[in-house]
Image (cartoon, rainbow, N blue to C red; front, side, top):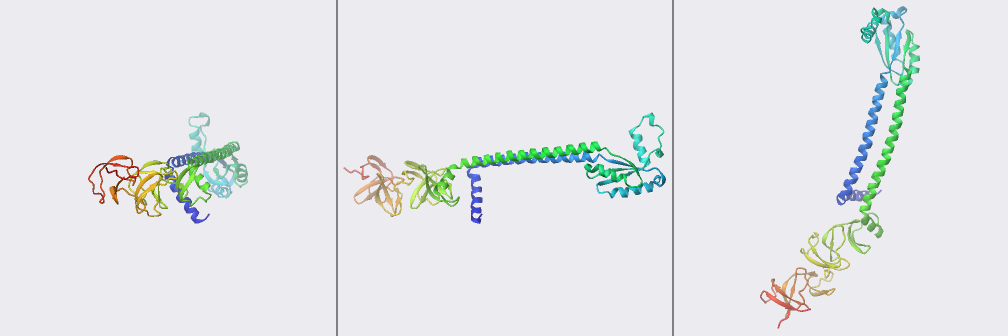
Length: 367
């Protein structure tokens, strides 16, 4: 993509946000909602997975140290832990002495007369082994049993397998649900974009009709009998503006006022006419507004008489040309075929304020 095209697209994107505020707001809301749904479910899935892993870590292997020979000595029994910790899948091996085991036993069976009189010498030193991955519990258990001094082990394979199954099912379900949510989100976002494009169909149709790239169409364009002012491919409101020596009025959607008289209340910076009523032809041009000839005097445009000065319709009030008097209004049009109260006098007029009769040619009728 060329840099100038990228700059144009960025500029049009920011401009479109404000030009089509409602659709921009809807698109942002839909996108944010989809991201929140997908993100929230992803976080929920992650946390549930962590909880299952934490529960899985509570499933430990109990390694009992032999109570024969030298292993009856606590220092020798502790040395076995060094070898247990060297096994790759072992996360931690915690030593529990006979005395600590007895305290735990009494706490678990307090008040049970059947276990009264149990002594520490009746129990064995042991290690509580926590694993990195409980799916490898069987292999790790065999490795622990192979260490000299370990008499036996106790491991709950079924519980570890159960946690592993739950974790695998959660992962599969989570991936499937997130994939479905992503697809739904993409469909919703794409439909929102299509609605936004439909909202701008007139703009797009104008650009396609002209046959130019999404770029740099600026001027007056006709589409299905309606004229538009287009600024870089986008129909734009300018109010009363001047283009190639003619005056036009573009409304909120860029369409030009045509075939009627209209009150021009908004003026473009390049317009040098005052606010007021003006007549516009079928092509959107202000009647009698062309300045190419720089004409001055009485001018007839489409059956309407105007007074021009240097190519512009001009309000003079009552004025005199030769031996004739005329009255030009705010938009330069002459008073014709009626009586009119003259309230504004040009410097050329030597008549007082009052009511006067004007003929079809705009000349004052003097008896």
